[in-house]
Image (cartoon, rainbow, N blue to C red; front, side, top):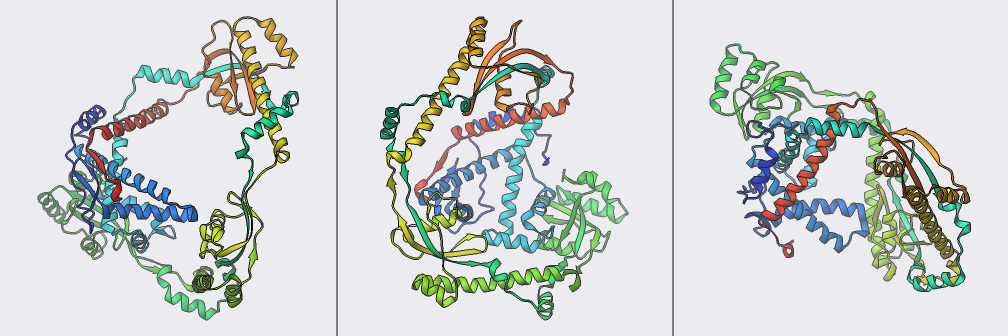
Length: 613
């Protein structure tokens, strides 16, 4: 769990949080981390402004991801909804940041570093790559300082939920009741009435079918369909034609040697001090032969690492701030640094282990080299073809483009806008305004990773109203199911009611007439997988039987079930108090957190200027 200064908050945190958030927040500005070029304010939380520049940075990242996922289906409406969700999320983050600050939550350098290093997106060959880290931040429009500041906020805010869980409690008597409920077993019988078994008995007259068709005509349409011609470029297809000589691979190995090398890594420990005086005192003790691990326990305010000798794990050059990184990578093994200042306080670092720079041999990576070389060359050729095809498709007909580039024109089957025969992006492209309405070539679009197409309509079939004779069978089947379902629902409920009211003879007669028999189930618990979960849930919702069975009914789309609960007992099976307690507290903590957010929305002076988004 992220560290928290527990001397400030104990078990009463939940009540104090509520007390705090009902008074105006003295929010600190977050502009210390984000500096926008524009002074336009798009939202305000108790006077704490969110600039348009910062909003656009956050929004653009989400917008890119969603556009890639939805392709042509991304619309103006979706764009506007995304803007609202983005600014609402940012407003919530500002409020939570202040809440965390007011209660003294803090994230240590060790926690931040570990979070960044453990992110799979920043890893190459299973190891953290600083180059990859910087590359991804650049792509998403973040500097390292901006990203790290936002992660600090995120990690600190996460502690609110974590600490609520720590602070929540459950009484021994309540825990005992939960244990009893968890161990409860029920013995019951049931009868299943399946719709399919009674369909033949349903009588649907012709007039009912006609009336349904006339009242629901708008449902019975054959959708518009298109057949398209298209040219496809595929990186996989191109890669099959790429040949690599031994000389090509060796030259590529020399050019890309950094890809197959391991940076020098250093296993580092640190002591984090609250002030310079303590740091200087500890540095003097180290000079006199003091033990680094013992001094860490004595001085460090990094709660996450102080009991592990200040261990930060292995780091590469550039992970730390530049001035600190230079010092660390100039130290010898087992050597300690002078006190160094950072935004967290003062540090003394110690290098505990050094893994030197290393490079894999050509023979070790030849197969990998061939794969990467082929992919790179295929991508180069694909990029060239993409540019040429995009230009030709815009300026010429599809035939001319295919002929000039020696690419085959393919033709699809007929398909509608909700077709699953082709990818969603392919279908969206075919039904885009420029293609379906204007009859133009589409834009060149990536429909799958490494697959690009340009297309145009070959033939269209207009939407049409289906004739009654085309759908009468479908309507009859639907009405038969509706009638049948009502019949078995009514029958099941009637049998259950008769048994409940003590009229067993009439109930038994109904069962015999319908050839229904009870199926007995021995003792089961709530989490039983022996029977359909809906049945189990219904059985455990019935009240406790008092010297006589309790009856009920459960219904789903496919069947209706008559239930007879015979008995309840409690097993001696032990489930640890800790497991049950955590299950209960996790649920109550989530509920409480939602309540906190609702109160914050009501009490804070929140302004969102939608017209400026």
